[in-house]
Image (cartoon, rainbow, N blue to C red; front, top):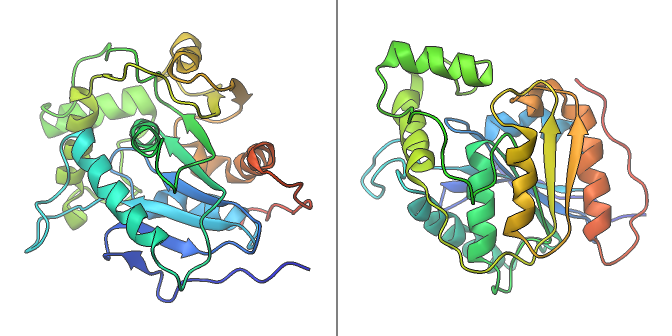
Length: 278
């Protein structure tokens, strides 16, 4: 019988920003860290977290969304975002009151896939580093952007472009005027649009690349190019769903995550069930 997973009190967050630890893993179980799409939040991973068994750990990226006395506001460059993420992970690793994070698996969708990749690259020689990377909805980082930058578009045109490319206008189903969502979304899009790949050596990290049949935002060729950014095995996993499949196909994706975790585990995990959609 496994030790019961622990839930952090009041959904505790490192430095109250950057990373939300929704629940800790039971002994020997993986921790999934979710990197949401541009304009997203920990809510983006809510259904997916609920579909995963209680024994696995769940964390989600929570980028700063508004300027405050201690924060400059949303990071507008990938390097700045990664710096904050790495510092938050370092703080979590030093927290002796919490359960260990290993094995740690990064899961990123859209802009979150890019952040997950760059964070993994930054941690490649660190004591705390991911065992696997699972990405979706984004071209290989080594490819240049092929479309017009979004972050400078007027609001009506931006909404229309987001719907055309991704099927919805971004965020987590809330009005853009709430909680500074437009500012946060534009900052994420600017970071994404200004990013350029500068690595001279590939990762040594297994990568699972999700090919979503109903996602028109990225081509199979752009997904296959993820193989060039790692010297470890990379596999293309085809499944149903559109760009925001974390919410629409959470049960199916939870099974895929658990299968991927089993491939990365140094020990054989007992089978665990996936929660039905709620």
